[in-house]
Image (tube, rainbow, N blue to C red; front, side, top):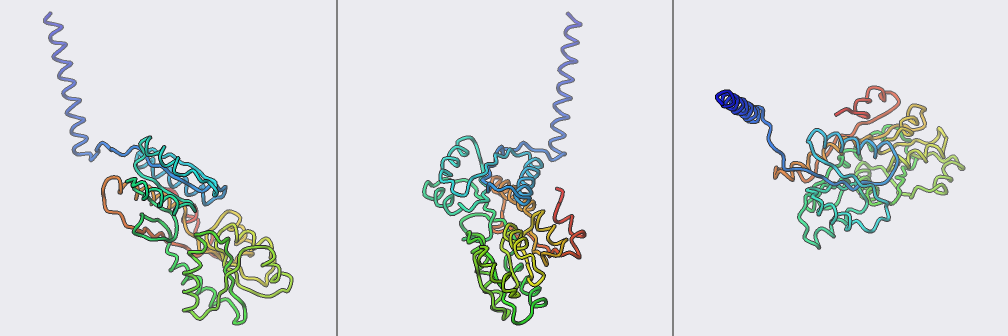
Length: 304
């Protein structure tokens, strides 16, 4: 009986020591229990390196913050986003990250239904007060490209902004147009179609092209195949980087979708925790050319 009592006392003592050790670790080690469990992400359904970089940034930042992420890729004509949002909120989502052309639809739905959930948008514009945004500094990019083009082009060469007419491209066009006009550079906007490019290729009319997306840069460089044309890009892909190496693309203003994923998760976590979050987080852009592409690998392919 005495032996059993001694064993019991020893066990209680061991448990107390363990409890005190754990309390000490939490107090002085800075570890606290997180209430955050889940963030939901609406992403564009496209297969390219930038989208994959964005997903990698989301996943790695979520792992570092010990947050669960539900990632959904949607078609551009997807019209049942509200069903997804309702389901995610019901299933415990505490913040929503959106990288989609459907942002206005999502904003409108959340406001009309008075749904209180932190919303982080990954895009270049809109009303900053409506939501938290993560993007690059479009004004800084436009000024940099205007300077590069001013140094490179001949006076008579037209400058053409090629667009897919999607909302993000059109928002950037407004800033580019104003910036280039202030620099005294005439710039025109054309939709990226082969007939629009054909006159420059067939008539050998020299021009400077600004491609508003990596896909447009790829298609323009592949179609023109002419040293007479100067092609600048916004954003990059594996194919665009190869075009730079081969001299088909003069240079690109590269932004890191990986960084967007990192900042979007951080903004979501801070919002949930009630910490101060900037309405617009701007990431830096880098000028990538044939001469410096190797030096910029850490920016192009970062590690968290």
